[in-house]
Image (cartoon, rainbow, N blue to C red; front, side, top):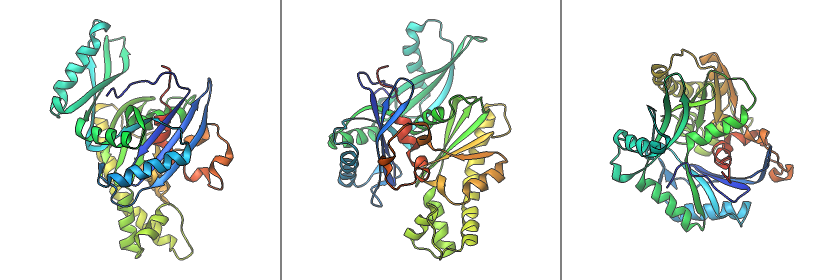
Length: 355
């Protein structure tokens, strides 16, 4: 499976984000100078359906996939989906490539030597990030995916009567979406794209609009949920609603902010560690901007906490602000409250057909 395969003969792309907590789908039409959102949907999964990226309740997940597709557009067949976590490893390598004709063979051979996986158990791919005229070197992003994990998702998608035409990576989808949101803006130096999911947080570093690296952080939405339950005596469901910013008059807002700050300190420790890796490979001492995505982006006071701690601008991803759509598509839903949830799915749907 070519991780960077391109689709042909279509004017739209369907991105499917299979998360531990929910499914998100985006059908995006590619116009000449703009994008039109034709359909979208979010469906929460029963607890334990997916744990740590591993499918635990296969039939439940197939039913959920079928439901969300039929709800959006029963004619959807070809989709782009992504992987993350332990099933994926990526690394940047500098190459001296004398002849473009042998680039593919050289790069994939090098990837097979570097991957910590058994070469027989993985699928390898690469993407050329940039060529450096001063040194004659080429910067290449290598990607290795575990076949067993990838195949389990491929089989499931086929059994849901869908056709996976591209397998992508969450970090690249998020980077793709950021490219949409920052188009036309000047370079921002170091930007940290913080995707806060249910069980895992991914931090992707962008340097001058070019992908740099990604790290996983174990602190995510579920950790905040547990802290709110413990510190505030909330049920799991009430804590989940509070994390989403849907608080009632019975919630002590001061106590909520204190609990979020406590959990955010643990998240910040993971960010600090990831940033130390980034600094070791790049000459920089600061994060110039943080962009939040995923369900955790809406945790009350979290963006302010990160802004104060890192003394930098923090914004919440909202790709819906950069595409066209009919307002009736969302009914009474406030699009400002769901944009960050659709970041990965939107990034997948931005994969251009016909190239």
